[in-house]
Length: 197
Image (cartoon, rainbow, N blue to C red; front, side, top):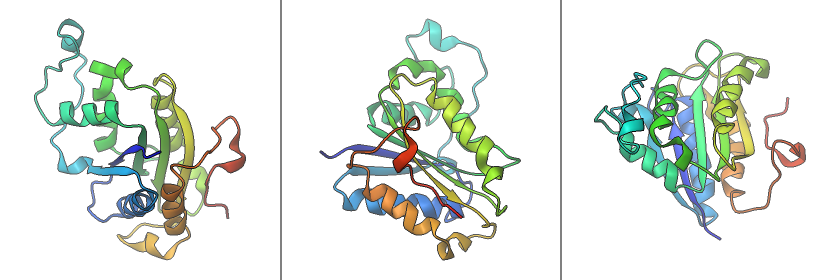
C-alpha cells in the first residue's frame, strides 16, 4: 500500500550532503510507489518558537504567521516522516530544530508516524552523530505511535557533494525503496539500516 512520505531536509546548503541523501531516499521511495514530498526547510520562512502559548488559547493556531502552518499540516497528514540534518556542534541544525519546536501548537495531532533519520558529518566516527540522532529520537518520543524504521549515517563528508562517493548513497536509496516493506522498530533492530564500517 502506498504511503505518504514527507522528507524534511534541514540542510541550509542546497545540494549539501544530507540534502543529496534525502534525494536518494526520495528516489527509492517514489520507485516503491509512494507519494513523496521533500521540503527544504531553509527555503521556508519559519521562525523560532517564542513560548508564548498563544496556541493553547487559539485551538492550535500559532501567533507567528509564516510557512510553519503549511509544513505542520503536511507532518500531520504524512504516514512517514524523514528527518535529515548535518551535524552542527554534535546536534541538529537550527533550521530543523525550529520546525520541531514549532510543532508544539498541534503536537498531539502528529501521531502514528514511521520515522527515518538521515545524518551527515565531517567526522569519520559515527559516535559524532549520536547526539543528533538522540535529538530526533527525543522528538519521536513525543509523538504517539511513533516507530523508528531506519538511519542513514553519512560520515567523513564535509564539502558539498562528497557524500556521492560513499556507501550512504546506496543505503539512502535502498532505505527509501523499502518504505513499503515490513521492518522492525528500534526495539528490534535486526533490520535497521546503517552505514556499518
